[in-house]
Image 1: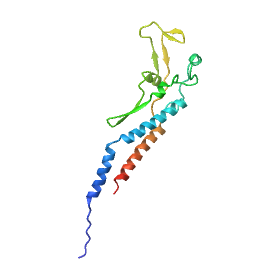
Image 2: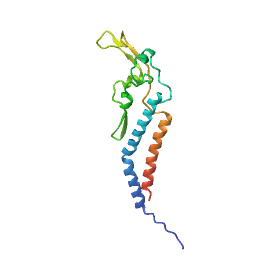
Image 3: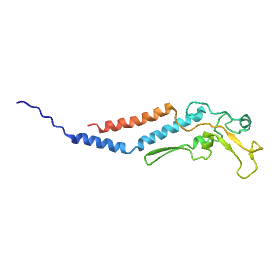
Image 4: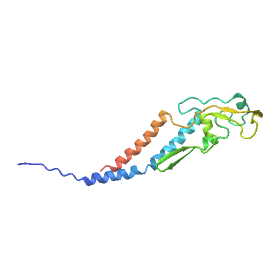
Length: 166
């Protein structure tokens, strides 16, 4: 009686899986690449003056634009601190991205500023009871940006798969 015997040596496959697992266990290189991409995305967003959804930011009030000493043609930019203080950080396997500027939130979400201790705010040399800042979403990712970030993750996964191949 004729027969066939197949011997499967699982050690090589297990070694490959362990190598891939080691590369996937540390997402730092992938997250760092995503962080740099987010910096590029937001730098362009400030240049284009548009929300992540492609909606132009609300224009400046005419009186403010007339008084603005620098960058009068740019929204959300006086000295460039907001756009230039964007940072990314990897902590506990997560990518954090944003600014440490306390005024970043009100520019993103909009809101009303009222005086805390004085009777009025000084706006353009005149006293006012409050100032309303329109929402100008500047932080986030568009569908296209999200695809770019997924592509980065996919590339890192493909590299891990190739490096683990026997």
